[in-house]
Image (cartoon, rainbow, N blue to C red):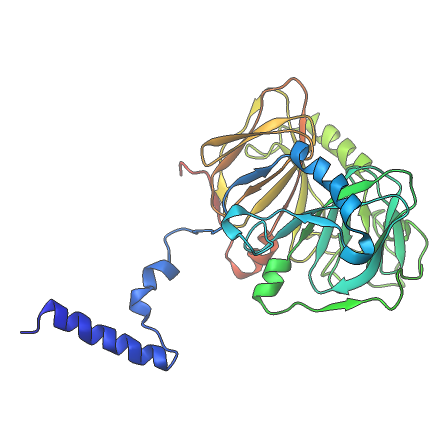
Length: 349
């Protein structure tokens, strides 16, 4: 009868033979690959605006847009150190552009969004159309579209960037190309995409892709009014309060094919129900203040704070204050839904 030591030695020799041929035994890693529930490497975390804001001004003093191309502070998840990612599929960063600066034109396959945090009068140009950005505006930069930024105002303008870059990197699908000039030439009048595609009508003689929204800028003033009108007639979701989705008007789906974005209102003195879902969510405080309880730990947030809730981590919203709390968020759920990978439940169920 073989001893345990003999058996272990034979197995180790066998595994070394497999390794030499770039093979591996599934039985040693099976339970790490097929887990009962998701085990994200990303962890819950909060970036406080009061800590970030001074560092943005310092970055302006230290690094030019010519050198940086995009002057951005990356929000790197502590569980993904060195990966420039806020979750395993999403990237987030805070970008600042000072008066008179230009962030040169380029394009890439990663889809991107902007949520404006501070300042107004700067522009983003996408596909030859410029839009002037105001706080709370939601701006899309779909895959492989030329885009650049410029600031013709007298104040710095700051926004939250969200991209599907980690997912594109994991799929080995990243392409990048600089524009031949610093800025792209205007090809359409300002506001063209909104009055052309966002009026409940469409030009019958034109077509547009349904993969991403043809609307460049979703103004905050309209979204905010929509929230208030809905709140006057409905309590909304038991988990998210009154929440609206930024959609592609041609398909009714998400504004970007890989990223879903929302604006939500948590009513005064509210304590919503907890739930969890596959797919990660990045939150940004817009108005008021509140609490997101993530895996039992309360994270009290204020305006422009950014928080991340990884996949399948239970969370709930609370607002102990007398005024409504407004949050912007974006998620990777469009990457999951088409393949039947999305699940959602209340933790008690």
